Length: 175
Image 1 (cartoon, one colour):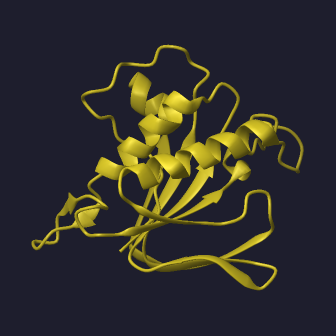
Image 2 (cartoon, rainbow, N blue to C red):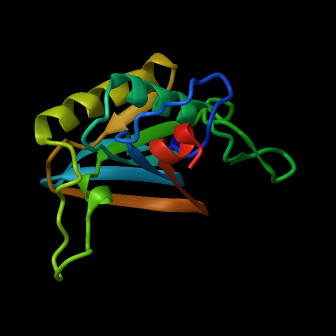
């Protein structure tokens, strides 16, 4: 199974995060399969699981990245034998294709071209993206990746379709 994760669920064991500058976003798409190509070469390919589009912003840190990975790991958005979304990615032995996605922080408030001022700077985003993927792997998930900052071509077959936006501020602050 392929796991594309966008975090959107609060886990009861977490402390509430009170500083409002944490807003990591992950768009999760449940997929039958997905792949990423850069310059015509496959950099990541999964079968059943999640396609994750990962956006990072100013104020994100390793703690929030780890909490988001845990949220995705435990998120029950896979069908059980009764067709009810009741199983996690690990329950279905799913995989994850993770790609960095600074455009999750596009602002179209002014003008006709989006601004990306809310996206984390490249060095911070790259570091936290790597930490995020490692946190998923440490939980026993098979994670394939795109190439950070590259022009990626993504192919996927959405399963459901199930698409969920996880926003750390909303999840962990209850907003």
